[in-house]
Amino acid sequence: MLAQRTLKTLTQAVGVGLHSGQRVELTLRPARPDTGIVFRRVDLPEPVDIRVSAQAVTDTRLASTISCGQAKVHTVEHLMSACAGLGIDNLVVDITAEEVPILDGSASSFVYLLQSAGIELQNAPKRFIRVLETVEVSEGQGDNIKWARLEPYDGYRLSFEIDFKHPAVDSTGQQVVFDMSQGTYARDIARARTFGFTKDVEMMRSNGLALGGGLDNAIVMDDYKVLNIDGLRYDDEFVKHKILDAMGDLFLVGKPLLAAYSAFRSGHAMNNLLLRALLARPSAYEVVTFADESKAPAGLAWVQPAW
Image (cartoon, rainbow, N blue to C red; front, side, top):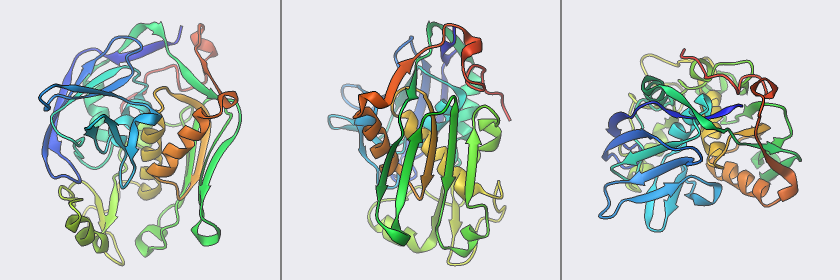
């Protein structure tokens, strides 16, 4: 049986929120089979559990936000991406503020936290959402078009193309294909950092955003170049971060996908629209398990190694 996974023990981190600038403590706890990923706002008078789902996403401006009633958690996508990359099914995330800490701006710190806690197999079958029909969402036309698509595929593959029309971005790789059966998430994707432009920072901060952002947790560019002294971690770090974000956004459906995802200029909003479009068409997917682990698609049955 291909089994569900959780952590062997709890692990903790302290950081600041990218947009709020608030100090936040994070405790990642093992969870029982079929719990899923649950964020718990322990700073509220009465702790509130927010279980991830496509419907729990209530805001997609600059990040993915999930909510339950008035309780919210912003910027969940990097931690969710790490869980997707390592195949974590069940986890309780105690959080002391409204935003997941940005740490170094990538998913690598979350990968380190999860792997340092150890990954434990559980006595319950791992459940996948297998895509049976192509589902696509799009927005705009001509030079302004954006789209995202899920297609049937025996495994999990993501393809992303960017188009920022910025010299620093245009000089790097514009398209990446990552297949879980061939690559290593922690090595190939997890270290890609979020990025932004100095021209946007003043506007964002006047709106109470990016208050915790800086060169230590983001790639920052002026009109011409990357300002980080150490440069880029990958030759195609910008588009790889879009793959990282997409993996986190798509895992908000609550189960790992068996599908090929492809996108052009997509973002958090379109990724969530894609999940909702999939779920709105019952004939387009099924939930499957693998009684025989050897029958599972390559790359999804083994615990992802460290870099």
